[in-house]
Amino acid sequence: MFIHLKNVFYTYNLHMPFQTEALKSINIMIEKGEFIGIIGHTGCGKTTLLQLIDGLLEPTEGQILIDGIDIHKDRSKLKEVRKRIGLAFQYPENQFFEETIYKEIAFGPKNLGISDDKIKDMVKNALAMVGMDYYLYKDRSPFSLSGGEMRRVAIASILAIDPEVIILDEPTASLDAQSRDKLLALIKNLYQRYNRTIILVSHNMEIIAELTRRLIVMENGRIMMDDTPRKIFQESIEKLESIGLSLPPVTNLMYKLKKIGKPVNSGILTVEEAKEEILKMVKKK
Amino acid sequence: MGLPNPAIKKGINTLIKFSNVTHFYNDGQENKITSLSEINFEIQKGDFIAIIGANGSGKSTLAKHINGLLLPSQGDVFVENYNTKDPENIWEIRKKIGMVFQNPDNQLVATTVEDDIAFGLENIGMEEEEMKERVDWALNIVDLNELRNSEPHLLSGGQKQKVVIAGALAMHTSYLVLDEPTSMLDPKGRKEVLEITKRLNQEEKITIIYITQFMSEAAEFNKIILLDKGKIILSDYPKAIFKKVDLLIKLSLEIPQITKLARQLSENGLNIPTNILKEEEMMEYLCLYI
Image 1 (cartoon, rainbow over the protein chains, first blue to last red):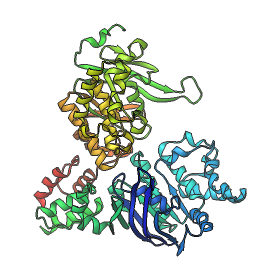
Image 2 (image 1 turned 60 degrees about the vertical axis):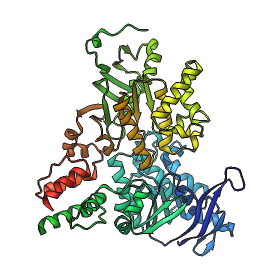
Image 3 (image 1 turned 90 degrees about the vertical axis):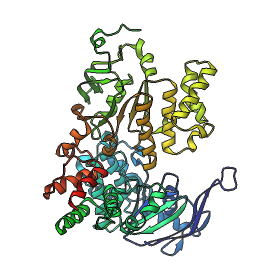
Image 4 (image 1 turned 60 degrees about the horizontal axis):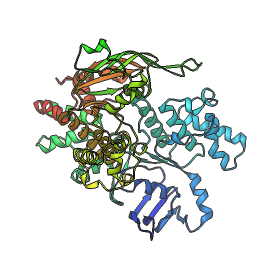
C-alpha cells in the first residue's frame, strides 16, 4: 500500500468564526513497510494528519492518493481503504464496551460481515500477534485486565482485520516499563516479521530514536523536517530545541560532549551506541 | 469537628500520617483485592515527595486516601489532627488538600480561566472582593495572568493543569497531591507542571506529594516512596533509590537512560557511580576519561 498526501490542507470550522488552519501544504509519500515516527507539540496537527491518512477526515484542499487512487473522489474506495489501515487512538482501551475479550476483538470483523468461523481465526491470530493466549483470555472481561494487557487487547482489536498500515498514537502512555517494553517488542515484530507499515506518534524521544527509520517533525501545521532520526538528531538539534522539542538523554549527552570539544560522534540514538562510542574514545586516549 | 488525635499531637511537624493503612477493593465480595497493605508513613511540613511504582502498585489508591476520597479498610489516615474516617472532618480536610489528576479536562468546569479558578471559592460562598484578590494572586503564581479570560479548553495541556493547580491555590490549600499530572502532556507541558510544582514548594511552602511514572521527574524530589503490590518497599533520597537499579528493573520501573549508561560503563571497567541521574553529572565523570 502506497500512501501519498499531495499538497494537503485541512481547516477546522471552515467559513465559520472559529476557522482554524490545522494543516498547511502537507506532502508525504509513505511506502509499504516503512516505520515512521511523527513528533511535534500538542496542537501541531499530528492527530489531524493521522485522521486524514486513515480516511476519517477529508482534506479541505489537496489529495490523498492510496495506490494512486484519490480516495475522496471515488467514495466506494474509501471503505476498502479504511479496512486496510488500522488506527489506535490514545488510550484505545477507553473505547472498550464488550463483555468478553473475544467479542471486543470480533467487533471489527463482524461489522465487515465476515463469517463466524473466519472471525474465530482472526481473533486467534490477533491475540497471538500481541502475545496473549487465546484460551486463557477469550472469555475474560476486558475490564478485568491490567493497564498493559488492556492496551494490547485494544491493539489486537485493530490487528484483527489484518491492516497493512498500523497507526499508533502515543501507544505507551501511562504504561509502566515492563508493559511498555512488551508493547514495543510487539510493534517491532509487526514491522520486522509481519512486514506492516507502522506510523508511530510519540512524545517519548527514546522510543522514537530506537524504533523508527524515518522521522517527521511537525510544527504549526507544517512539516518542518522529514529525514532519518539519526540525521535529524545529529544535524538539526538546534532547530528541534528552537521549537521546544527534547532529545533522548544519551543523544543530548553526546552532543554536549562534542560541543565542549570532545572528539565523539554525535547523532547517537541509543544507550548501547553511546556506550560503544565512549569506550572507543577511552581506549584511544 | 472531631477531637484532635492525641497520638499525633506530639510531633508538631507531622502533618499527614498513615497508620497501618490497608485498603480492599470489593471488600466482602469474591473478587476482593488488597490494594494497600499496612502502609505506614508520615509527611512533614514542607515535604517534597514523589511516589513511584508500577501499574497497579497502589499509587492512585494511596493518593485518594490522603484527602478521604477513599477510606482505609483497616488503619487510619490523619491530616493534621483530623481522622479522614470522621465524616465531620472531611470538608476541613479537603479544604487543606488540593488534588490534581491525570486528565485536566475532567477537572475544568467553567467557561473562562478566571471563573474556573474562582469556582471553589464561590462554592464556599466567599465575598466577591476577597475572591477577586485570591484569583489574582493564584493567577500570578502560576503565571497565567494574560490568559485569565481565555476558554480553558483552548489552552495547552500544561496550561490546563496550571489552571487546576491555581484553583487549588485559591482555596489556600497547604498540600497539593498530584496524581500523574503529566502523563497526558507533551514534554513542554511536563516541564511547565514540574517547574510550577517546585516553585510552589520552595516559594509558597506548599507540601507536595507527586505521583509519577517518570523516573526523571521523581529524581527532582527530596524524597521518593517506592510502592510495590500495595506495600511501601523503599522510602529514601533519590540517589539512594537509584543505586538499586536491579530492584527498580525487577519492579518494572523505568530506568533513566543516563543511569543505564552509567551502569554499562561501570560494567566495562570505568570508574563511574551507577546512580548518576543527570547529564551534567555524567559529563563531569566522562571528562576525566575522554
